[in-house]
Image (cartoon, rainbow, N blue to C red):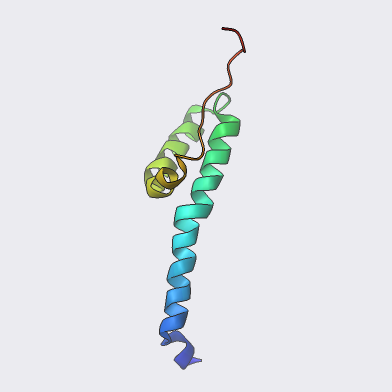
Amino acid sequence: MESFFNNSFATLIAYMGVITIYLLVIPLLLFYWMNNRWHVMGKYERLGIYGLVFLFFPGLILFSPFLNLRLKGSGKG
């Protein structure tokens, strides 16, 4: 078992897992959350979301060319 923890392949897999969660999974969840709850968020929820945006900014920047948070207007004009 000790040889498993000293294995560089296991370390590489662990790093890839953390990077995937940090750059892909959580930013996509943040985009989804903000898009669905933008107009109904309370002040503490909004403060928490802003903190998470600050924390996961690199992942959000990766998706920003492909996703947008344009608010749906009334359709007039």
